[in-house]
Image 1 (spheres, rainbow, N blue to C red):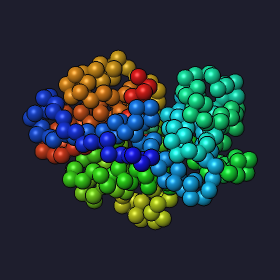
Image 2: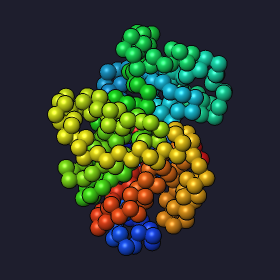
Image 3: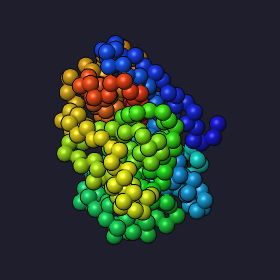
Length: 298
Ligand SMILES: *Cc1c(COP(=O)(O)O)cnc(C)c1O
């Protein structure tokens, strides 16, 4: 098996009796089956950074995240599997490598953790701050928070290319890297529905710079964004928050379809999909839900 084996991500048809009258065909793209420890989309986002780091003869990857970051653990796991080392810059100078199980796991996978203040972390996307970190660790390839860069988008474009023949595709959003990549890989006739897990998140403005990195044309960026439908109203209170209604929904979907959903990302996106079908907006169409994973968070 090669390092990046996405063949476990099957396209699973599901039946939801509630929607019999809407005559929709629903499939779930099971990227959650790619790995037990790491969200499937995190592997997709890291694939080309790992390959690039190897080609550049780097020692490994330097990246950053919060103490519970899925991206940190994904980077630690991917570098470990590739035989490279990794450095994780973590938000919160009061923390240490045994502060929580996520950080412990990162350490076990060989990641060196560096804890910085929230003030310094707040500058994480400023060019001067990134230059400073790169100069401190010249033997490491720098990957921004959440894998949100050119390589991340290209890795997820491959996921989009795997989704042929759908009228509508639904996916959860954090940094928007996954959704930008999918959008680039989808056939032109397919609409991409994005569901941010954050409250007050401007999906289209967030997607613009990432798409531009690949397309290099404002006109093309606009053209692609015309095929995006944003569902900003299903954040259930915001990032890392949820309600009993969401938990009950997740439970019910597990019973009815056998598909487990998480409460941070995929549960919210699946809810948005069901809500849109119920409103009759997707009648007689073929729909794909991209299951990005996240199940290790409970
Ligand atoms: C990280 C994550 C996302 C968000 O992906 P982005 O590329 O940051 O938009 C979605 N779903 C799950 C399960 C995740 O872990």
